[in-house]
Image (tube, rainbow over all chains, first blue to last red; front, top):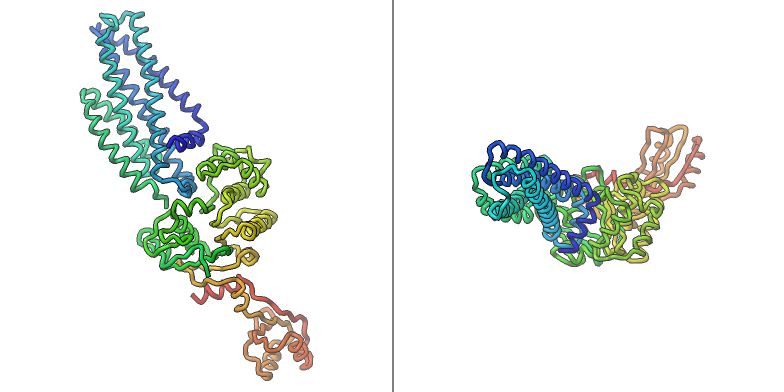
Length: 223
Length: 301
């Protein structure tokens, strides 16, 4: 599997472009955090929870779109550019070939998201204390709150990326992947605003099953 | 006879349309099997079915004796070019071959250089395939297909975009592979003249069926030659032939008379026409081409 993932990465010559996307998202999040701190200042919030929640929701949205772009490149293009016809002439299990793609997308999205989350929270701590915008300093309970939001955010992004991956295997078009990404963003906003992120765990399990079914039933259909 | 591929009653449906209709195919081991037929006959679909790229809806395909068709073991012994020379276009020709060799578990840089040289792409190896011409893509795809020195080579219209020099080189390469490494080769094409040079066996496909399958030698034997004569008075020539008991001839619109009865040779007919006062402009023994045979068989079906 490791070799298959490495081979997927070899095909992926424009990885620098995706690193640039990550950098841009991170810069965007820092700017967004600054703006949200000023909004908090007007409310004179007692803690950083709202800022963390908003920042986390925005990061999830960005990475759901990001994973859609990645899925189009790694999975959909293999079908639209018909290189799957070559891929399936290898004596490697087709399921393993597809699993390598799934792991690459999930791995890259999660890694880049963690980097953005870490840089954004560090920025929030530094900028928050420097601007003294909340009533209190960034404390342990704020950090715990961020940790929980961060954890749910990762689970949420992985879950909906899996939904997007399933759509890529079933429909094999970038339009469907893009629409699923947008739909995921809307659902993300609803779940986060209603504080029912736990639902993403159940959705995640469902989407794992859906991904498995889509790989088995649809991934090798290329006619 | 020992066969590399045997297909029985192969069926493939796209929706309600039967693209392959009870196809039977027999590819002898170490042969060069020319699969010929018009566009839309089902050649590419059949090759995809053999490669297990698409599932068949009926029948069975035996590859290298394996009744389950093209499995892992068989794929490791097979090179292919199906549909079109597809590549990862962000990568160079060399990188595409490197990836292929790694997937095939056959990493050999020397061999990669060798195949690039065989298809005349050494100096273009570091160019991105996105910048390759169609002919170059086709040659690179052939290089990829032969990289592992396969026992079975499946090539779908491999010479379409090549120039005459490229076609000649590829023909020599395929014959070399077949003779030197005993590679069984299936080539689909609608360039019938090329198949006549290359193939040892022919399968004719039409409307999703293989309507004829024969060694080329037998086709040549079966294909009656004809004598073509050009004279000044065709009706008189026809009367002369009938008087001599020659029945199997045809008067053509272009001033020629085609004689299929080869009991007598061309010199006999030349003398006959001249002796009877006809002006004889030309007389030839013409061999029937694969193309004529194809139209005859396809027409009958």
